[in-house]
Image (tube, rainbow, N blue to C red; front, top):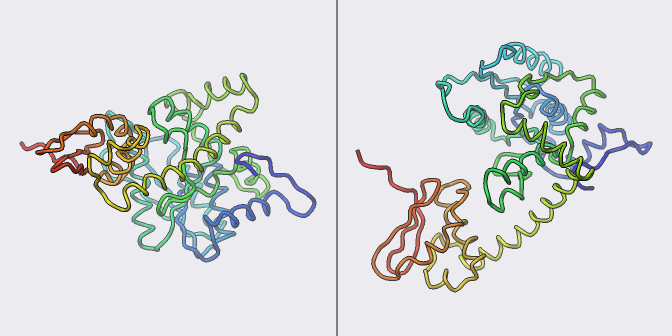
Length: 327
């Protein structure tokens, strides 16, 4: 069954039991496995919290609600989350970031960083996974946003079901399906009033771009998801090819790098840069030709995006964090 396919009753399973079966088969939630659920109070995180409690067991689940205090409804959202957690018999942890809210820059990125930092601390204390309520609908919006903002093959791969501790058990479900689950279970959810505005780029994609694509072709969302699924499988093959060249090393001789096809050079450079950065260093692959052109003798460097530096010394190129500027 592809992401977003409709789940219907066949006389033996209702929607809820079918969702539970699918999530158990995926292995992202398991009986007795500790999990911290990122719980905003919205439909998707409410659906996830309920399914996590059913599959993992209430004692294995901790709900994390982050109250940023940025919206007039923030207090009501927190109270709603407390009531729902109490009803489900789940421990609720509430965090209120004390860091100064940035006056400029990406407010959503700041909030996301605060949320995941709090989740990571809580998860370490419980030796737990961290579960986010991203759905197939979110996946489509994420791919479209990344295509517009970052020319990288990662844009088409979308979000992964698991990245370290982080799991996304609902990626095969649409936003409509999580709402249906909540209605069947009698679970209320909160709506973020900013979702109905064009303040954020993701909202503009949701409100304008996705409907335009569906007007062009009614299967637009399903086709985007199907493409991402195919490319993710192909990416695994490419990753094996890169590993066959690097063989576990975090460096590569320049001669060996130049010997590879240009497409593979880009993948190798990206892999080494990601390892140095400790996170995806988007945009580095586009500098692969500059790195391959470094001299075989002496020492030379190329400064790259995400504070990564490639340094060639003695014909071998290595990647590391760019040293901070001296004052």
